[in-house]
Image 1 (tube, helix red, strand yellow):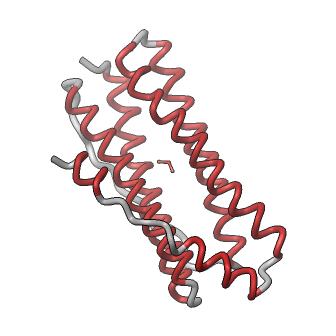
Image 2: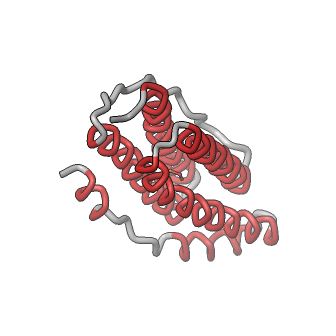
Length: 173
Ligand code: FEO
């Protein structure tokens, strides 16, 4: 059984993961609006991945006898100054997610909730990957400074990312 504190914190994180999906979809819409379909596809794939993260929290709260409570999701930004500004915003967002996951882990340790510590371990590892993938894109973009040719090349490369619906279908069964 989840403690009341843990249940509240997990429900908050469930919302945060759905907000991440919403944010990345807003970024996809921005990229679509400036004709960078590869960047847009990459962001759509990221939005699906965030929905998977949200569903992991949903399922875990349920499995532990907690009550899922959906909170209001705020409106993400619509416009950014440049493609680089989008990726910098996304990287800062992932750093904030990492901070929140670490806080959840601290709470699970405080509460001596071993099952939640094991559950959260997956997210601790995932955040290392998330920060790394956004960080590498930001580094590359800073290097080429929004040069149209380089952006076009990156757009083709990012567009090759597959959208993986398998994990989402597994989490929603
Ligand atoms: Fe769910 Fe990108 O962290």
